[in-house]
Amino acid sequence: MPVREIRHPPASELDLANILRTLGDPIRLEIVRLLSDDRERTCTVVGDIVGVPASTLSYHLRLLREAGVTRTRAEGTERHVSLRRDDLEQAYPGLLAVLAAV
Image (cartoon, rainbow, N blue to C red; front, side, top):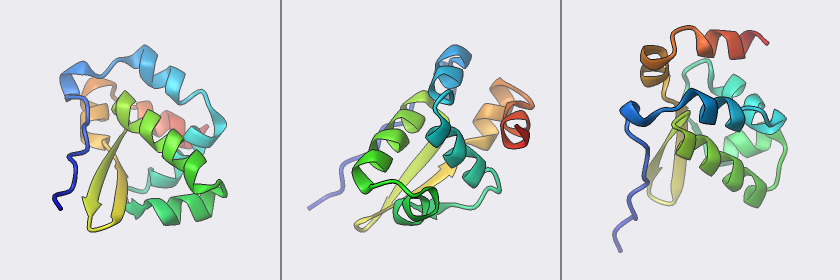
C-alpha cells in the first residue's frame, strides 16, 4: 500500500502571523527548540523528549507542519521531523535564532 503524501505549504505561502500564533504554545515552542540543532528526529523520539502522549504530539506536529515550520518525511511506518530552516531563514531571517534563544 503506498504511503499517503504528507502535504507541506510552499515556502511562498509562509505567513509570519500564522507561524507566531502556532509557536505561541509552549509544547510547540519546545519542539522547535529541540529541532533547532538541525537534526531530524522520529516522532517517537520527539514525543519521548517532550513528554506528551502520541495523540497530543501528532496534533502539535500537524500544526507546526501546516504553518510551514517543520517538514515531515515518511519512512516505512516512521515519521521523521525536521525544521524548514532554509525556507524560514529566507522568509524571516533570524527568526529561528530568536526562538532558540528565548
